[in-house]
Length: 430
Ligand SMILES: Nc1ncnc2c1ncn2[C@@H]1O[C@H](COP(=O)(O)OP(=O)(O)OP(=O)(O)O)[C@@H](O)[C@H]1O
Ligand SMILES: [Mg+2]
Image (cartoon, rainbow, N blue to C red; front, side, top):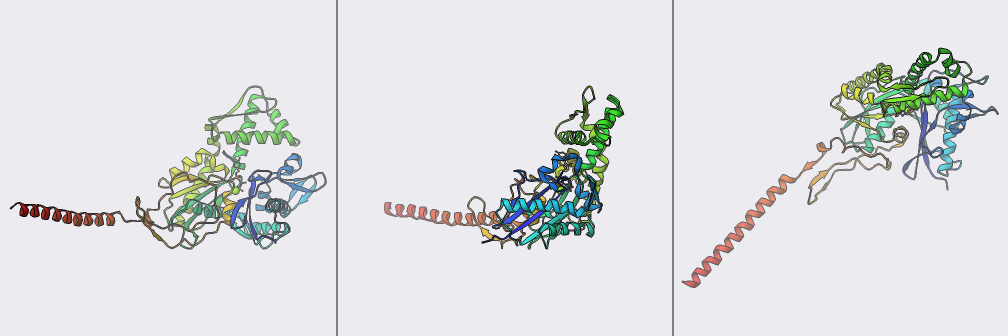
């Protein structure tokens, strides 16, 4: 018997992740044990398009950021072969579909539902390329969802946001920034106002840092050394390794004040400080925050929290700029930033159950809670959900009044009993 299943794919600029719903539960797809894989696509020696871990073996025959080729509908030249963006998408989606079928033992059965996520600002033409790529990968009839709306669905359920509560999503990934405001409703959720976005992401910060490193190599050694190891025409594997090293240094600067980059041919330590790095990226981050604020204002609601999603949102300057711009909102991080979008695209937003009065001895209250989702995310809320007081009725005053009345009645009975005993005793004596 074939099992019914659905799949969502979050094709990212840097990493791709996916989720499968089967047996009523949403699970992440694992790629060699990891919840995502590099979105690079390589052309093998046999002319086959490879993605996933095997693509990284061919640094000189690789398209590092295929999502940008899709966004701009540009052809890609790989080792004298011209490829269309849809060829790259097909390679990525085929690898995901094959991995999911194996992991969940789905055989050749068709998925009941396919959801492809994409940035807010993509043109219908770019989204059509995703659909065609999915069709070629055997995933036909795909639905699409914008990335921040998919993430917001997961967060609304995960954080048990009360009906009427609103949150903003700030998703800064490898190549795109996306934002949206979502509100929990009785029947599910609404997107409030127009979601926003900008073509800004970690790739831009890598380029800025690489430029700074190149400049420092020029000062510490010579511009020719940088040309030989990174910026020249045939730097292939060596250039790829320097890029990797610089990306790691950038990520370390989210935790430490300094990071070192090793460049062959440079004597001495090439150290970048956090302050230097932040000054390089501040203007771009301010653009994303302006877009977030515009989206929140456009929604006309007050958001209780802004959720930071996407790898590049871990940059500490993001949190400080967002809290400066929206001082009343709580700033929260998604615990598993890579899976929020893919899992959210499959999250079922059920109608919350009718409020049931629950009278407990220690805390008598009536609770109104959104219906349990069958998706059980592994995120742990970092604080109690912002507010649920609007939907709870406190019965303590009523119970207090009942207890006082009971005490008075018992007291009267007891005093009456005592008096009649005294009078009985007096009557016996006299
Ligand atoms: N600790 C960190 N500090 C700063 N940046 C980080 C950190 N960890 C990861 N990144 C960056 O996050 C980016 C990848 O994020 P993510 O996986 O969310 O992007 P994506 O989904 O592939 O891209 P997009 O959604 O923009 O198409 C990379 O540029 C990576 O270097
Ligand atoms: Mg992303």
